[in-house]
Each structure stands twice: as structure tokens, then as C-alpha cells.
Length: 332
Image (cartoon, rainbow, N blue to C red; front, side, top):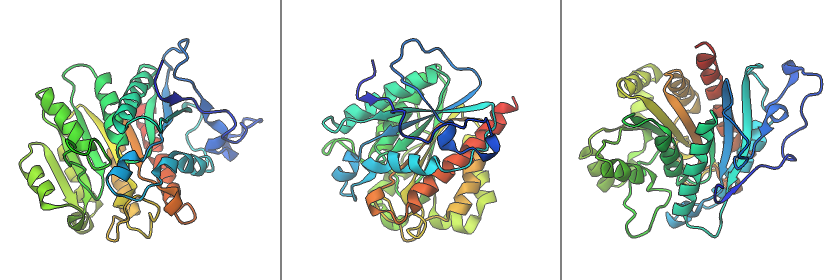
């Protein structure tokens, strides 16, 4: 039995379509519910996505950010449910519920998410994780990593204004340490940590982090200013170079990498953030690589949002990324 795991109730989304009219369908009509603790389940055939929420912003609190991301999964779901269904009949989307443990440590919750991700991969479900703070990332990464065959490399691309490579020996894991946890995991396994960050803001990262990156093999980044000057085609070239010799990819999108006008409801606002239109082109390119095995969206903080702008943007990214993944895997 998975710990700190709660299946989704059937009362959340809209009722299913009665006349099988996909032309008028919305996501909320077609999402099905699944209990990962059901031991009678067997691997699903075809193309399957599964939403799982990580209801914790403990790491945001420890990191002195604006709390509220614990409500992010519900907000993203509500926006996603209203979007039109463009995935046809050959794709299924499940909602498997949440990792939720307000009385447990962030580290315990990360391990619970990792086990849930492993279960999802065993069932041929491609994870879409809804954060939560960016402490979500290590649990998602660890679950994907444990699901891979030995000696297969899992690269990481992070859309983020921050490196999130802070040490955690004194504070414990928090929203700024997830990728340091990944780095340390790889170091323990005598592996390099292939990590590309897109959207770094110099004024949001201290010199210690830039020094750590400079001394670390396989960590690369582009600042928000780099991306603005290069344009999406050259950024995509950078992504291709990074992925060239990698087996699999984990993608994580911190919504605080986008400018505050587009994403006001985040744990740490970004005045000089990325343009989501440009980012979307890069995200679609990443999805088309054929190497993406799981992705998440984190740091949506509904108490600080304006008219659900940020939650809607996160849901829109899910809409477009799943379209590309469905197309490339459906054509195989």
C-alpha cells in the first residue's frame, strides 16, 4: 500500500459525455479515476497519462517563500477540466489522486511520491505531477529514476528562475534544494547529474550557486536574458545538444520563471521572467524529442493568483505538451 496517498473522488470533474460527442468534449468529461492501491490493476495498453497532485508547500515555508502552493493541484485541475479535448479516442487521461500528509516531513512526502511514480510507470501511465512547491521535483525524479533499467541516464530540464541547488544539511529539504538532492543522489551512485536550467535570473541566485554550477560537470543553464536574445530556435538547438546522448528526460516547470504579468500566483514573483509564448515553443520541441518520461508543474499559489491566470497557464502547458506526446507516440 502506498503511504500518504489518497485516490481522487468521483465527484470532482464534470459528468462524462453521454452521446460520445468528442467534438464538444472537455477534459473534465473524459478524465477517469484510478486507485493506485488497487492490486487488481494490470498495465494499460496504448497512450495513457495520469495526473497526481503533490499537496505540500512545506519547502516553500522553510525557504521563506509565499505559502499557498499546497492548493495548486486543485486550482490546476479546475482549469484543466474546462479545456477542450483534442486528444481523440486513442488517448486516456486518469486522475489518480494526491500525495497529502500535512503532519509528515517534506522528505517523507518526497519518498511517498517516488513510490507512487514507480507504481504509475509499472501501469504504463505517463506521470503529470501537479505541485505543490518545487520540493515536488525530487520525489518525481526519484520515482522515474527507480523505474528505469540500470545504466539508463535520466536527464533533467528545469524551467526556473532559480537553480534550486542549495545545500540542505541544516534546514532539511525545501523548495530550493530539490536539484541538489538529485545531484547528491547521482554522486552517491557515482554518476554525473545532467541538468539544464532555462530561465535563470541572475538577481535571484547568489554567487555561491553560480560557483557551484561552474564547478559541477554536466550542469548547464541559460538565463532569461539569454533566451530573450537567442530566440526559440537557438534555444531549441541548445536543448538538442544537451539531449543528444541522453536516454530519457524529466521535465519540470516552475511557474515562477514566467513574468509576474503572466504568472502572478506563484511562491516567488518574477519581474523579468520568461514570455510563456516563447517557452511553449521550446516545451513543444522538448516533448517532440521522444525522450520525455514525465513532467510536472509547480509553485502555483492560488491565494496569490489573479483570476486564475497562473493556474490556467499551467493547465494550458499540459494541454499542449500532451498533444505533442500523443502525436509522436501514436505514430510509432
